[in-house]
Length: 281
Image (cartoon, rainbow, N blue to C red):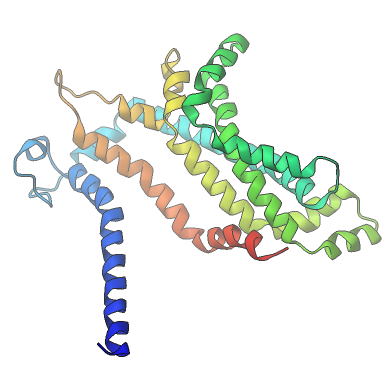
C-alpha cells in the first residue's frame, strides 16, 4: 500500500470517527425532541418510532401551563444568575491578587483552591446541610452559597491564569500615571479579561443551572424554592402511576435550548478564554 493510499484511508477513518462521535453526542438530544413531539399513545407503542407519526405540541403546552415548572424556571434563573455574578466578582478579585500581586503563600493558596475541586458533591453534602440547618438559611440562599463552593475554584483558577498572561507593563504604566490599585484593576486590567469572564461565567451558570443533588436536598422542606431539575424530576402524570415521559422530555428541551444558544453565541469567547492563560506568561 502506497503512502498516498494510507493517507486517504487515514482521512476516511478520521471522518468516520468524527461522524460516530457526532451521532453519539447528538442522538440523546434528538431522542428527547422526538419523544417530546409524540402523544401518549405513540410513546408507549412498540416498536418505538424514530420520528413522530403525528407530531403534536401537547407536551410543550402542558409544561408551559404547569405552574410548578414556571416557578422552578424562575428559581433557577435567580439561583444560577446570582451564583454567576458572585463567582465573577469574587473570582476576578482573587484572580487579580493571585495573578499580579506578590505576597507570601500565593502558590500554596492556588493549590488549595485547586484541591477544592477534587471533592465530590456527595462528600460535602451532609456537612453543608448540617451547617445550613444550624444557620437556618432559606433554601435559595443555601443553594447559592453551596454552588459557589464548586464554581469559585474553577473561576479563580482560570482568571488567575488570564491575569498572569497580561503584561506587567500595563500595571507599571498605570502606577506611573498615578492610578490606584483599584483603578488599575477596574479600568485597565478587568476589561482585558472579557474572554475569561465570559468563559467562567457561562460555565458557572451552566453548572448552577443543571445542579440537582443539592437542590433536591435543600428544597425538601421548602418546595416553593425548587429549581428546574428538581421540578422536572418530580413531574407526576395525570393518571396514577403514569410516567409523563413526553412532558419530561419537553421540559428538558425547553431548559436546554437556552444553554445551547448561549454557547453558540459566545463560542469564540469561550475558546479564547480557555486557551489564553495556557499560551501566555
